[in-house]
Image 1 (cartoon, helix red, strand yellow):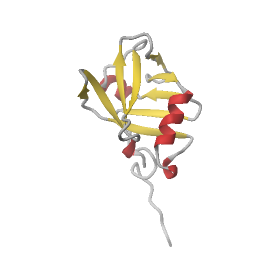
Image 2 (cartoon, one colour):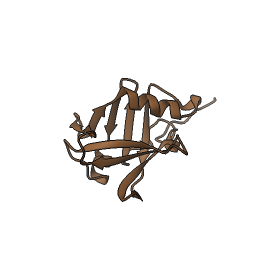
Image 3 (cartoon, helix red, strand yellow):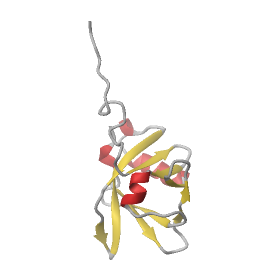
Length: 129
């Protein structure tokens, strides 16, 4: 008999209980309940996503006060979300072809980095399995 084992590690459930952001090809960008708590996000907060131009696969999220930020709205299960098909497309295009999918979930760093006086959180694109 040849068996194949399934666990959290190989079924996509390895991110359970950790701060994550989920993107889908429809343009939905959703922050999990754990990321909402970890980043201290609230409904109607504004966020921007930042791409490192020197390392295009590196993305970050930051809360902002300006009118141009994406406004977070509440999801069904306690997550916060917004829509931007353009940003999802840019994230997808920054990834190697073999990693591109209709929807992806990334871990978010639990500690921020400080860049130009702003605390930004890394979206760990290398966490895709």
